[in-house]
Amino acid sequence: MMVADTLDRGRASFERQAWRDAYTQLETADRERTLEPQDIERLATAAFLIGRDAECADAWARGYQRYLERTDACRAARCAFWLAFGLLIKGERARSSGWLARAQRLLDDNRLDCVERGYLLIPAALGSVRGGEPATAHATFDEVGDIGDRFRDRDLGTLGRLGRGQCLIQLGKIADGVALLDEAMVAVTAGEVSPMVVGLVYCAVIESCQEIYDLRRAQEWTAALARWCESQPDLVPYRGQCLVRRAEILQLHGAWPDALDEARRAGERLAEPPGEPAAGSAFYQQGELHRLRGEFARAVEAYRLASEWGRAPEPGLALLRLIQGQVGTAASAIRRALDEAGSRETRAALLPAYVDIMLAANDAAAARTACAELAEIAAAFGAPLLRAAATQAEGAVLLAGGEPRAALDVLRRSLAAWREVEAPYGAARVRALIGEACRRLGDEDSAEMELDAARHVFLQLGAAPDLARLDKRAGKAGPAAAGRLTAREMRVLALVATGKTNRAIAHDLSISEKTVARHVSNIFTKLGLSSRAAATAYAYQHGLL
Image (cartoon, rainbow, N blue to C red; front, side, top):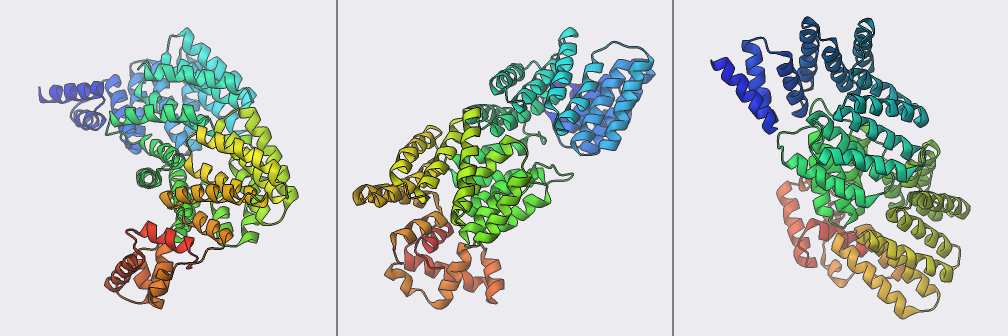
């Protein structure tokens, strides 16, 4: 009776999507009796959703054996597919291939026409995508969807539409591809697919929207994914990726402290054993936020972690080196990154930084060429975010080339585009360029208004390097208050501005952590500041480093 109660509780928890309790109850029942294969599938699913990958793989393998004992070759092949798919996600391609071959042979030997044949096509389609053959992959995903529809399997039909949509986007048929992604998401939000498929579709669709700079859709589906994750607190897969996407959107909208919190949580969750490759994106996002705030030591460490987890640190690290005055280093890094970039999406992410760095390196020809390519990609995608970046780059190139009047017209279009996507930092950077263009045209009043507006936003955001650059161009010096700092306090302020903790500063200066805290308190009092972020912004703004 007790075993039956445990099993019933496990089944009930599974239906409620209380995954951790479902796993605990089903795993307990599994130790006490031989579970039915359907319950082993539930156990495998719950293990996957709470991040117990080893236990998940073991359960799928046992489900495979149980179904074989029941002479149900089709369901055995289904278990083998999910086991192989999980191994593929983790990068264990040899083991994954072995299980897929076993499942395929099982169906072939028994000459079975079943929906599982469609599932077994998915890894081959993904292989074509990885191999740069989207047309081949599209044809395979088309067959996947047809099999799913023929057997009325909504999971498979949805995965087929998802794959076809992604392939069409890669083939440049963005509108058609996005329509299929939306159709897949309708099935997800309507609750028509299984929990194993829901998270996969959410993350894949959001990733695709981000790649084509479709911010509106990315925001909409990220919010939906967040709600789904919040309704199931035990979830481990997907939540980290969800946090990364939220961090990117929060950064765009100027909520930098919240964005950094989300990126940190994503890094912690995704780096937990056994670890997810998406951790690299979480660490990269942390690096971007630290760079924007002038916390360079923390930014470098975050970019290093991103690289360790397989996410290239460009363009962020190159832009950091540019801010530090290492123009040659920045130029070499961004050139290499762009040379290695294959897809338009990857190149679009690098080109705005490439233009800025080439202008700083006095390579106007390279900047113009990159600007033209970025404009072409923006036109193809039709995304406001990419249009904002492309017109900003064009305006900067025109301004650097001594054409302030032409630059002004283009920059005003860029400002409108940044405002359309509600991106205050991007808008402020453009206003700084507009101010410079007005100044070159002799319109000092308009220049001052534009530069003051940009300065106000940079102060609000804590964009210390941008403040410093703005005031350097304006020829502003540090205020008299800075003169009241002692030499040691100036040194402590410089280290605070790099993002170092009191403990790290104490180590660098060979003093106690308590003494550092006292210096920091004195700095805040003398300069009328209330936070380390404000101190960092002050130091950069007034050229005290």
